[in-house]
Length: 96
Image (cartoon, rainbow, N blue to C red):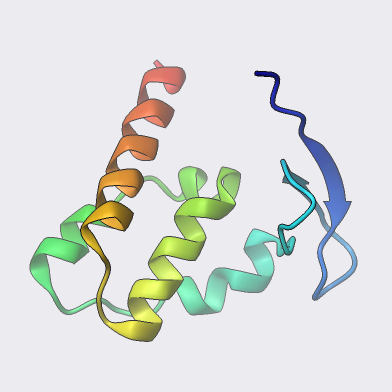
């Protein structure tokens, strides 16, 4: 299965380009979400999970959405946590 990716302008600032891989995605750039992502997390387990390099958040809209959902709802399902960890591990492998 071929995954098609393309760039589209951010829906908030209309300046930055965002790489997306599906029509149903709502493209938002890292700069527009930076304020939401900088909220302090109190739970030590989640704080450790979200302590990844900032460049991962810049590159991956999925990681940003999971962190924002945690901040917003103060909880995640097991599947969300599992997918987050799996995505981070894949990005670390690609970086090496």
